[in-house]
Amino acid sequence: MPSTLTTIFRAMKYPNYRIFYFGQGVSLIGTWVQNIAMGWLVYRLTGSALLLGTVAFAQQIPSIVITPFAGVLADRYSRYKILIGLQFAAMAVAFILAAVVLKDRVSVPIIIILASVNGIVVAFDTPFRNAFVPDMISGRKDLNNAIALNSSLFNLARFIGPPIGGLLIAAFGEGWCFFINGVSFLAVIISLFSMNIRSAEIIKKQKSFFNELKEGINYAFGEKPLRYLLLLVGMSSFFGLPFQALLPVFAADVLHGKSEMLGFLTGALGMGALTGAFYLAARQKFHTVPKTTFRAALIFSVCLAIFSLSSNLILSFLMMSFVGFGMIVLFNSTNSIIQIISDEDKRGRVIALYSLSYMGITPLGSLLVGLLSEYIGVPYTVFAFAVICMAGALLFGKNLPVIFRRVVRKTQY
Image (cartoon, rainbow, N blue to C red; front, side, top):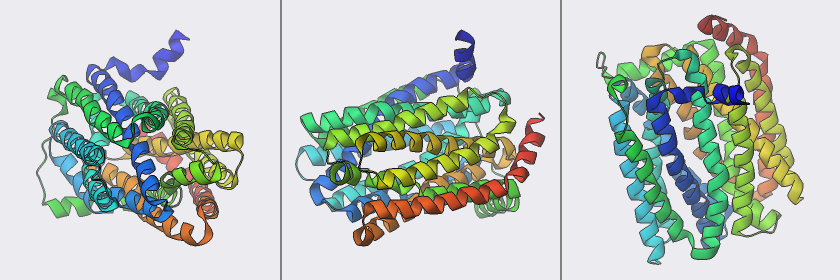
């Protein structure tokens, strides 16, 4: 058991990563408390699946425009310094949300505006945060483990935060959930200031901004392995991830629960995702990860299809756990492969395109799923999208040998 734990947590031997890991952990729990409160607040005020999708769209749409440019900046400037500023910006949004709700001045337009501002912060934060991980890890062989541990942390927070949020909503209302999230950002800010960042400085100003952006796009889509990975992520994000915006509908209308039901349903998703993250962290032979990615894509899509048509509580919780497992293994493993096989001087831009495929495409799917749900219902819409995800997974499986050969060459197995 001690040797297993050492394998799973081997990236913790790097002091900067260890400090960041624990600080980020506290902040992410607060983020999930806010996420659950935001969804429940919108559905309580409107009872509309369309508006749930609209708010998700507003929060995620900035990624489409901003993320590619953020990737260029991540290859040019100090990821560390910009990350600090972004944490302060996200904290301010959380406190403003808390103020308007606690003072009973909240409305759907205000929520959409603040969701959009938060989306702008996240659009910058995601490529910087992902590209920052290798700056904390000097041993390339431990990079996959660090990425997997980051994912485990995110999903541990997904497991812990939503049930807490559901209980807090029932006891005190949504406003205090936003306030708690604002306070939680202090943990990651303090951790960033506590790091030794000499090795994390990146200054790169060689070509014009737009030439570097074009170079990154041409490189990512010109390389077949990167192109196949980005297409899988894009399809899974557009058609697969929007189900999360509609979980309040499943909790209230399909499973006939209240905010606690939403919290525990999201917690089941997080429990599966956390299991998937630790599963990846324990793997030491990286050349097997492409095949694992293919299997995870199938698990994600098949279990999402079953969940969408289930009205049985136990089956829904079980399928949501498998969806979480498949989802996190799929997206985390593609992230790891992309970081490993990308050229060092283009990593920030390629990761930005990954983030765009992961988060930037999702708002369009969220808007579409909200619109279609008004006509054919939430369960059938999610089912149809899950079937499309299955097709994407099978297409990826057909191109698996190309990705496998590149991974073997880069890792020299």
